[in-house]
Length: 121
Image 1 (cartoon, rainbow, N blue to C red):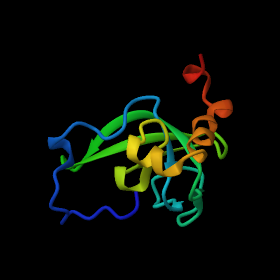
Image 2 (tube, one colour):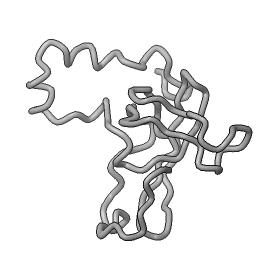
Image 3 (cartoon, rainbow, N blue to C red):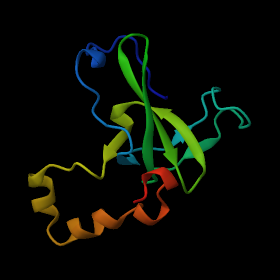
Image 4 (cartoon, one colour):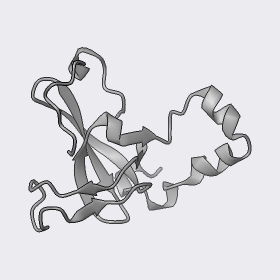
């Protein structure tokens, strides 16, 4: 949960969560242990940029922000993250998919074979 800034003007919880349970997301940046992840040193990398995970829980922090528990299957870490640290792979807008062209089809398969058991059909 890097970059928690209490001075943010937006009260995220006044709006619906940006992501939903089971949604496939990708980390937008490297996430390091801020001291809240047991068994790892402070500053140790937990999630690399571009790593794919699944939203497993949605909670709030400081009555202002949504915190998404994301299970990153490849690294085996479940990390709490803010929406600004994530990008959806399941609900990309049509205009974005249009700009990606043929590459959009490859996004549909990313992370699917590594999905947690409860998310596989």
